[in-house]
Image: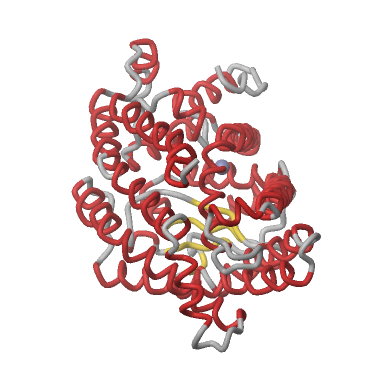
Length: 423
Ligand SMILES: [Zn+2]
């Protein structure tokens, strides 16, 4: 079979799915039942704003998918990846460890440049007109430059030992490579609050002593000795409200967006923080890490099996298992595989989120604050309330707003069980 036909056969199902996603998002959920459930807590204007927001973003979706396919098809099937490899190996005297960092830099830079117009349109037209973005052009450009350098360092630090393992242990590399990737990832999470996060934001200690005291109290109830509570200048970029839990060991901390503290009452902030502490109490970080171990190993093992066949190597434009083009193939296959595994991954994520929600309610016992802040999060993010159910099952990382509110209402009347996963 000619190669072009095989490429079409491989990509067509994914493109068809993209088209279906586009159509479903545009249409939204049209069931009247769903709408009336939503209208118990929100109004028609909340629904309309959320719809407008998602439709405007969705218009760019086909372009971003086409760029994705074009970028990887040119490199893998069009032979550009192999050409770039030999072109970079020549001036570096054939030393792969010198050519690899350059190869990675060119790929990341080109990828950033081709997506830049779309990303600028999203930020400066859609998000700005929706009243959500506050970023300046200077900050935006600086973010791009810093991310490029950072990604370059991270990918290179992972790729160098992985390629050395492929060369040294051609029949055995997925196992040690998994260990390398997870070690770098754990190290990254540990140093991130000290080294990486401050590159993008300013972090200050939360000055509101009363709020800080209440946060400490709740975290003690969750069984966590909290060292510091930080506030981040998120308002420099957007108006979104959030809080997150980050770090590992002695770098562990709770970070509040300054927007959250400015826009929410203390009991509402506490409810958001309690949700984050719920993730900690339920060991979601450790469970997530174990799932990552399985995911990384399975991906690398599949890649190894695939690349052991000469015909597949030829199809993807790799001269050998250890070809630099591997670092084009890997993100491409991971992205396609991500579409296939997304329903399972999202279902696990929603399970974790439900457990964290319940923990938040148990820790604070404050049902009204939970419901109020849930509504605020949706309104401030101008989130789509009529998100199609099928897409939600496929990609939804969090339960739907009306589901979270219903769970809190049930909690208030004494039903402490988690709702049925998908009702
Ligand atoms: Zn969560």
